[in-house]
Length: 119
Image 1 (cartoon, rainbow, N blue to C red):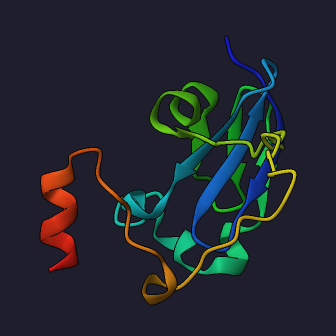
Image 2: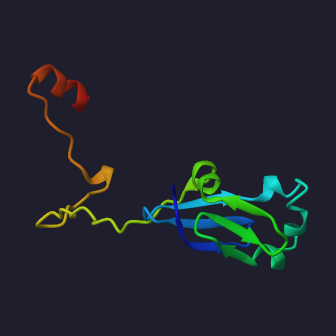
Image 3: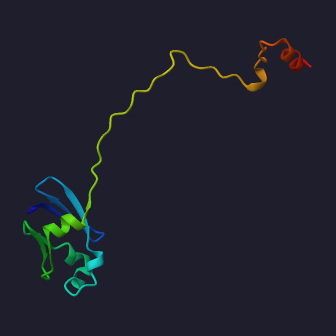
């Protein structure tokens, strides 16, 4: 069985539950607010009065959810991992870009093509 080690009721009617396996799941309670046991939880202050029972969570109004429900139906919370940046390779000398008009036309290896450009 899964055991809840940390619990947080958030402002968007989601519960963040951290389990003994060090996984954190977000469970959205909004779809349950229409059920007969949960309408009291529409009040955010009442929703935030949540208790951790280890294998279940419980509110003061008597509504409860099992740890398995939070784990299976909750979505996995993504942890932001600091990623090492790839090294940036810089040219040893700055690249010089000349405007197009200042560039000299390239001579072709074929003499026929050189004449057509000059004309």
